[in-house]
Image 1 (tube, rainbow, N blue to C red):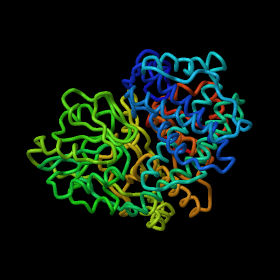
Image 2 (tube, rainbow, N blue to C red):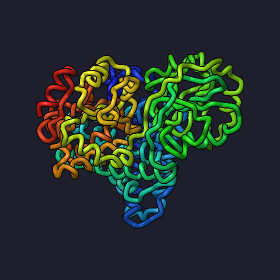
Image 3 (cartoon, one colour):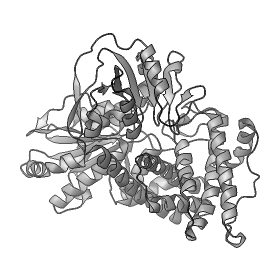
Image 4 (cartoon, rainbow, N blue to C red):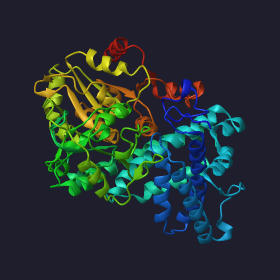
Amino acid sequence: MFCYQCEQTSQGKACVNKSVCGKDEITANLQDGLYHVTKELSCLVHALKQKNKKTDAYDRFVREALFATVTNVNFDAERIRSYILTGQDLINRAVVELPVTDLPKTSDIPRFKGTASEMSLAAGAFSIQKRIERYTPDLVGLEELIAYGLKGTAAYAHHARALNKNDAVIDAFFHECLTFLSREQTAGDLLKMALRVGEINYRVMELLDQAHTETYGHPEPTAVRINPIKGKAIVVSGHDLKDLEDLLKQTEGRGINVYTHGEMLPCHAYPGLKKYKHLVGNYGGAWQDQQREFEKFPGAIVMTTNCIQEPRASYRDRIFTLNAVGWPGVKHIEGRDYSTVIETALAQPGFTGDGDPKTIMVGFGHNTVMGVAGKVVEAVKAGAIKHFFLIGGCDGAKSGRNYYTEFAQSVPDDTVILTLACGKYRFNKLDFGTIGGIPRLLDIGQCNDAYSAIKIALALAQAFNTDVNSLPLSMIISWYEQKAVAVLLTLLHLGIKNIRLGPSLPAFITPNILKILVENFNVKTITDAKKDIAACLAT
């Protein structure tokens, strides 16, 4: 195995025996095999689309297959094997639909067959290491930059599709891009495609924003309880709002309190979700603390999307996975039927008393912030607000992430912090006060709500008759996995410069790739929090 797709990769280079995330060699190799099958299928589907053939089943598979290979989504080798077999069946179906003269050149490697272990051995031929040996670390690094961005984009498209939002242009691009990655390319063409991934991801995030707001209303500033109350309990982690809604419907009147966890925290701000009185609060923090937190949770646990860690024995019998998520031996729920989850929650003791009624604020999406844009602009013109900091992104367990806590605590009192994604847990329980009635900490939402942050930045730029790069705005981004790569590519596509990225650079970003990013976008790595703040305020 050879895996360097996430920030915690071993020694900052690659996981080669067992992944730091807990993925074993068989599963890692199978994911490489699934990615290869997905590329091979997309070459055929891309040709089918040129002939205006119906491709819904192929589109749906490619979205989910890419999502299944995102970090901390699916660790179940048998599930990945099943995806591979389904993909191969779809390849056979697509071949039949195309005239022989229109069939693209496909791999002459035999189709995967046999057990998961046997497939894993065959999939070794498609490892990243093999490609590095054949090409160069720079070219493969650029290919993986595109692939990881595409996987993050597929995850967002999957969430939008759950709410019946789809876009033919987006689906066509997945196949076009994977076809592109199936052929040898120059570094220049790879960089252009990476920025196109960013362009499409912006479109996907906009689609997902529409799906959320049209279904559940625009987020509203909302106080969310962060300590439990007495009663039976279910906690929901991940990202998918539709999964939470269905659970809330099925648990209504059952005497069960529902809590969010991790990236589900922003759900409390949507009118269509917070109307459920038994959605009572948020439990715990970011994904990397779940083993300790879930062990103490006296109810059922539902993982809708990433990030799942290996469940401890103490709660393995009361954790459930949905959608593309999987862990060997963990019960998987199909069709959003939560009856087993509900039975499990009712059989557990639940919380025996109420905790401290402390709350934190969420719900500062683009609709809310732009609704008071005039007040914000006046505060800037009057000198009450001197600078904006966007501090957000993925959280993680690797050392060095306390930088983001120190950064948030150290910014001057006349600045405003925008935050999003699970990186917010580094400081979102702290009290930052207000400036003229404007909260100094504005929680914009989930990682996909980077779309909201962009809309807010564009609105401010328009109000001041300038561009985003000329605003008193600094972006301090923490990355961990492929969704963060997709968001980064979107920011680069929009021409946003001077992004500070940490806690460390991706292993697939070689020195030569970094040189390109620095020369074109002035991407920087984080250093010391106070020094970085001073540098931001000096520009």
